[in-house]
Amino acid sequence: MRKVAAVVGAVALTLAAAAWVGLPVRAGAQGGGTIEVEVHYNGAPVIEDIKVNKDVEVCGKDKRIDKIGVGPNKGLVDTLAWVTDAKGPVTSKPVALDQKACEFHPRVLPMLPGEIDILNSDGVLHNIHTFSSLNPTINKAQPKFKKVMKERLEKPEIVRIQCDVHSWMQGWVVVVPNVTKIENVPPGKHQIEIWHPLLAKQTKEVDVKAGQAVKVAVELKK
Ligand SMILES: [Cu+2]
Image 1 (cartoon, rainbow, N blue to C red):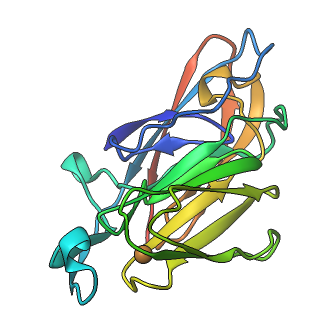
Image 2 (image 1 turned 180 degrees about the horizontal axis):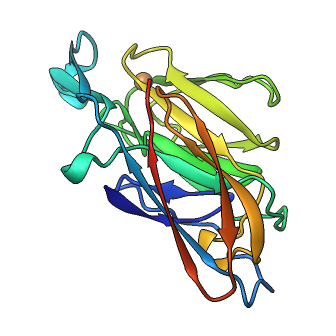
């Protein structure tokens, strides 16, 4: 069970490597409490090994995709948690989604509504393709010389993203509605949502007390 440093509206990334960067912290939430979320998965990890048939020099010959990644103490990787009712400013710094060695980094990216920079660190052709219902679809080639594509995602939504050139490339951009850090939550009852791309989302009610930390342990299931 990994602790999740959270952000709201955002996040509790259990994936240590996927640091949560670029979000401004909500101002004026003094006297708030903290929510610590531990997300477990008791099933076996789901790993897919893929033979690469394209751009092998850049992508590598094999890909190992952690579809359901489980770390020490059954900590679930690629999980986000957010407070559903917190309000925050609507502006944010752009976040970056990189394509490196023909994988999305990070695989699960939280962001506030606004701008996203889609990077191509590979020097090969990628084709960004998003699947969403509230935000317009993005379906654009990103040639090898195009290092950055600036796009906008304005509506809170979970957006699946794939590359149409490399079939194994899949990621998620989670547009969250607000930016209260989970550690600056106003006292009172709040609902948090805990999400993983391939498991059933859970909702929990949390009672936050000023100056205190509430621990929430969650087990996600298929
Ligand atoms: Cu690609």
